[in-house]
Structures are given as C-alpha cells and as structure tokens.
Image (cartoon, rainbow, N blue to C red; front, side):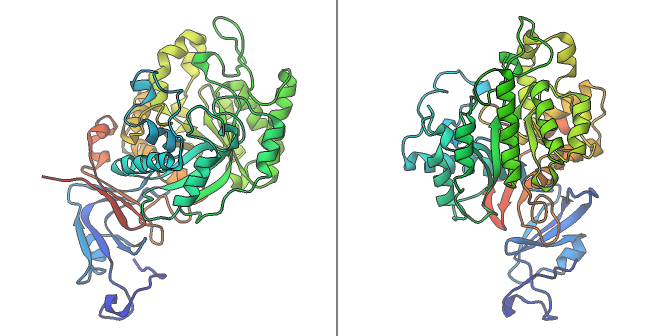
Amino acid sequence: MHFPDATSSPTRRGKSGHKPFADMAFLGGTVHVLDEGRRVAQALAVIGDTIAAVGSKSEVEGWIGPETKIISTEGRAVLPGINDAHLHAVWFGAQWPRLMFESSDVGWHSRLLCSEQDRIAAIRKAWQELARLGITSYTEPGIGPGEDDGETGCFGTAVLETYASLAGSREQTARVTLLRLFGYLDGPSSIDDYRRGLETPAPSADSRWLSIPGVKIFADGIPPMRTAWTNEPYRDGGHGALLTGDGNEQERLCDFRTMVSMAHERGLQVAVHATGDRTIEEFISVVEKLGGAERLGHYVIHGDLITREQIERLKSARMGIALQPLIADQTADWLAKAVSEATVKQAWPMDKLVGNALNAILSSDAPVASPDWRRVIASAALQLERRDVVVDEGILTELLRMYTAIPAIQDGAADWKGTLEVGKVADICVLEHDPLAIGASALPNIEVDMTMVGGRIVHERAIN
C-alpha cells in the first residue's frame, strides 16, 4: 500500500528513490486493523511514528531495507493500541498494586499525594503498568479545582499542571485525554463553581499527548448505594437525587440542565456520571433540546440502569456511553439488594449496546476495578452470553473495537489513531495469540508481548 506522506533521508530510500524503507516491519502474524470493514492483514510497516503499510506479507516486504527492524509475529496478533476511556490513572498509580474491589477499604480515603514529586511518581507508575497491558491511550475522567482540597491529592488542579508539564516528554508512554472537573469527585458541584471553572482556560499542550476536550459532571451516585437518581424507588424507599446545585429537586435539575448547556455552547464535550435511569433521561433530553451532540460527542459514563428506549435516543442524538462490565459483575449482588428484580434484569443491557452503530466503549474505571482490558472484555462477553448472545468472531471483534476504534471517536481523534490504517500513528499492541482464534473467555490468559506508542517500543515481554 502506498504511503503518500512518508518522508525520509536519502539513505533510507528504496532503489527507486521514491519509497522510503520502513523503520520497523511486523511480518507473518494476524493484523487486526479494527476499522469499520473489520479488515485483517498479515503484516504492517512503520516509518517514524506512523503506519506506512498494511497488507500481505509480500506487500510489506517491499518496504524492508537494510536497517529495517523486523519483528516476526508468526502465531501472534497485532492490534491497535488499547484505549481505556475511563481510567483514573493518577489515583491508580498512587494506589498500585491495590484495587478497590480486590483489596480492603483501608487507605482509600487517605492522603496519597502531597508534592509534585509524588504526582510525577504516580503518573510514571501508571504509565509503566499501562504499557505492560498494551494500553496506549486513556481518559483521565475528572481533574480540576473542585478537588483542590480533596482528601487523596489525586484529582486537583496541581495534577492537571503536572500532566501538562509531562505532556510529550520521552517518559510519556500513553496518550492522555483529560476531562476537567469543577465539583467534588463522587460528590456535589455548584453552578457558581462550575461557571468559574469554565471561564478558566485549560493549559496548552500537544493535543496528541494531552487533550482536554471537555468537562465531567457528577450528576448522581450509584444504584448499590441507593444514590443513583431513579424512576422506580429502591427496595427500602427513596429515589436517590441529583448532585448538581443546591435546593430542591427542581432547582438541582435546573442547575444540571444549565451546566450541560453552558459547556455545549462553549464547544466542549460533556461527560456525565449518570447511573440512574432518571439522570440518564434528563441528560439525553437536554442534549436533544440543544440539537444533539454532533461533533462534540457528549456521553454517559456508566449508565447502569439505562433503558432500551434511552439507548436508541442516545444513538439518534449522536451521544455515546462508557461502560465498565467488570464492575457490573463485581457489584451485581449489591445491586440485587438495592433495586427490584425487574430492574436487575434490565440493568447493564450489553446485548443492546454492542454492534448497533452506537458509540459505546468498554473501560475499566481503575483503580476501582482492574485496568486489565482482557478481563473487561471477558466480562462483557459473559454478560452477552447470559442474554443469549453468541459471542462469535464478529461480536468479539466488535468488543475489541470498543477498546480501540470507538474510543478514538469519543476522543475526537479517529482521523489519526484507533485503527491500524495507513497514515495513522503507530500505537500498537502485540498479543502472543490471536484472541479471535481462542475466544473471549481465554483472553485474560493471553500475554501482551509488545506495546508501541508513536513508533516507539515502550514494553516488550521477555520470552524464554
């Protein structure tokens, strides 16, 4: 395949003088492009930080020169770099190796970061662990002044400044999309604080390494804690409530609608932590009245109790949803104690969210749950099977796209990352086996052999 934008020094040009040699070539394995056509190739070539060719082994061999590094991928699979679009990386790095649902609660609300050195160390640790997992992009969902006095030190303005200072540096091994937060994490926000936050400019950085496209709003809690805002009452009464603004229910709702509208009118993406069906309903309604999300890509975070009708309206309004199926598995028993049996059966409707042209993504919410995307996909597949969906190669391919191509759409970056297409950045994950050959349930047992970000190898598994 021709790479029209390639540039190189004369010493790297092929004999024809027209085509440069590749810096690196992956030969002999299965290359899952994960584009809309679900194309599969045998080989891939990289020049600099960019994919130069994708195709058959013989086609890519034409790009090999005397200095090309050749990586044999016989028996292995090459995927786009994994994009975890809901991962609290600083908190994850500060807590590692502890995960909330897999360790005791001791220390989860104590001070973790007190200095710039602490923040840098936490980010570096996160990047190191994410590289081992093949994760090349992630969304840090909620950093800003609302948490300047927060108990952990993992979410305030200083964290945003640290990210900006590291953006594009050699030590950065994952691209960051960051949503600003103008209230408390998992807590209330006021309309005045929100307005002041919107008026404060975000730091500038190379958007391919640190992108700050919008804001996060905490609109409600979670169903197991009976804090999600729901239409149906909880088993022991109550409907939960909105966390936005002050006053009675109508006043909080008015503030919520205003918050969404203010960001939208400024051309900012809006991501709303919305788990209750009533909260989701109000978010969709606001965006519908604004004429839809269009290019801004507003989306629901979590969406535990989303209804089938709301899913169709999300799609019509060009909104998305960020799902965490591993958390759904780990909280299923808690949910059953909080809501009716009918609500439990309708919660987390994975069968309606996969492969229906909706911008639905899979993510981890680490360190609440594991950042291991292989486990997340296995959980998603299990939930589909419980709803009588056969997880064949087509469905598994779509689940992989929900961790690569579709998050790139959410990031507003689908033109340059998310798939293994010519001209896109060489963000690559190499697995020891092809996941489509062994199935979703075995995916957590497949090793990540290599991670590449922008043509640079940032993780390589030692193989005996």
